[in-house]
Image (cartoon, rainbow, N blue to C red; front, side):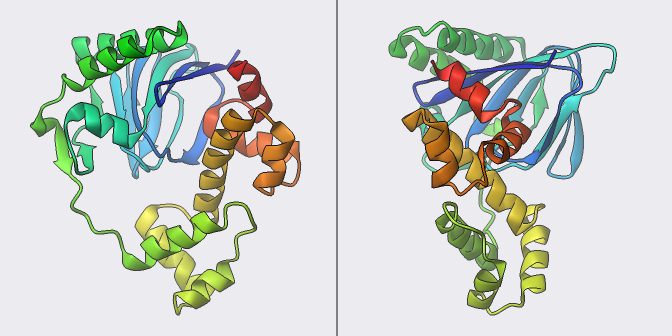
Length: 259
């Protein structure tokens, strides 16, 4: 049976997951994500490159890094934990001002693995915020300057502006024609440019952002139907469908986990 449990604390979301038949669709998170494969094999495509994390593998994801995910062994369940850490918090703990990116996507480091497990356990057992902050510092102390690359890449200006416009439409219906017109492109040129630069279509990006912000809204309001209305999902089943594709469980199940 597939199982996904989330817990939030000190601007960090911890996830315990057990899956065998479930697979994540292509998506991205706004946070830095650090995880440990506890059992089985985690297979995923990261920025167009196939990855496999075996037992004790530490998985490292940068913010907005496109990926999917599935169990790589049909005979064995995949067990893993993840920590989703807001960029500003992670950079503060690192002592960095500018955005950096992990230079490796999977590492095998026993201390880092255990430090991630320790913080995950502290979050699930609702330990004091001070302890959680100390455990986060333990994690970031594992990294040296060589473990990161500075993010000097300048995002395509058209894509950057398009993303900003899409963010403004999260509570509405995506209008590709209007965005393309604003960018002096036809809609097919716009879709092609956006996908070439991001790996996903504008509509996929729109849905991914909508689900991420619906999750935050649900955490604040604890109101499923207000979330459906606020982010213009057709109905609760529509929200649940897209929520599960990103987080492994329905919005309803996630709400129950917040209690």
